[in-house]
Structures are given as C-alpha cells and as structure tokens.
Picture 1 (cartoon, rainbow, N blue to C red):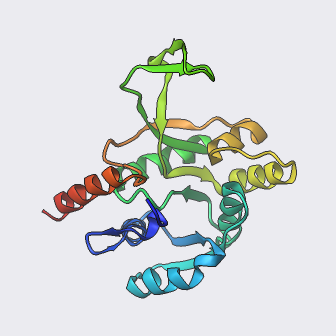
Picture 2: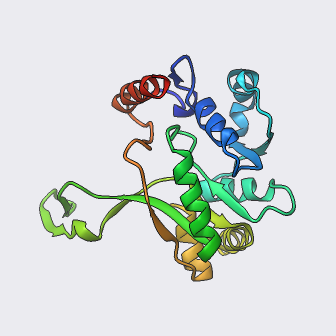
Length: 214
C-alpha cells in the first residue's frame, strides 16, 4: 500500500494506536511492549507515542532481522513475573475483549492458544505452470489470526532455541510446536478481526470503526 500499514490513518489516527488502546483497556493486560523497526523510531514516537495517553506501562523494543527475532525481542523486554504473553500483529485493531479472555483461559490450561476461523472458499493447489493439482479439504483448513497467547516461559524458551538453531517459523505457535512439542489450542476467531493489508481492508476497517463508535 506504499507505506507501513501500522501508520495508515483509521478514523483520524494510525492503525497501531487503535490496537494499543484496545489492549490497554483490557483488565487482563498488565503492560504493553511494542517492537518497532529501528528505522521508524522517530516516526513511531511522533505519530503513535505522542497520541497515546495510556495508564499502563508501555515499553519499546528494537526489532530484529526476521519476524521471529522481533518476537523474541518483545518477549525479553517484558517485566519479571509475567506468566502469559499475548503476541499480536498491530495491523489487526478490531479484536474483542471476549477473544482476549478466551485466549488467556485456553493458554492458562495448555500453554498455548490461537484464534482461527474456518476457510469458507474452495482451496486449490497449483503447480508452477498454473495448472490445478488438486482441491484441498477445507474442512481441515483454518485462517489463523492474532493475538496468540502463550506461557511466558514456554514462548521464550521456544523462540530462543529456534533462533539459536537458525530455524524460523511463520508464527510463534509454529515455533512452540516444533521446538517444545506443545500444540496451540484453537479458539474460535472473529470475522471482524481483520488484518489491514490492502486498500479494500482499509475501507472495511473504516466501516468497522464507525460501527464501533455507534
């Protein structure tokens, strides 16, 4: 979309501001850590920090080369005594308090939980020539969302070992499962918990923001 989606204007403020305020309002959240690209430090301070008036502590961690390195930096920045960690993509500003509560409860029981929604469309795989090579069973396919919730100790150990081994995963649940053998419990996700990636997503987000104010 030509710029970082976290700074795109949504209802007059950057998308990331909306996400942070949602976390800050939750009684389940003790503190927040934002992992930023070092090259965007000044922009983050100017466009996000200056707009926030949070009662909860917010820390800023320096992002790494890969997404997984950044996740580990964020976990390491947390205060001592934290038991559960919610890892989130700031481009999803519409998760609910109810979803947070379900994730925390599930992760408290089994160590890891993630939200996901069933795939609705028919999914096909294609070869390198663009020829269909088969239809996938959508009954076993889900779209994974964030936040994902983990035991602090479990997540930190898994990420540290994965990075040390040079093994990188597309999400933290994958790292936890591969390194520690703990499979995340699926929590029903939310249709409106969209990730703002395309211009259409931003238009839809504007509609959702308006509904939330109504």
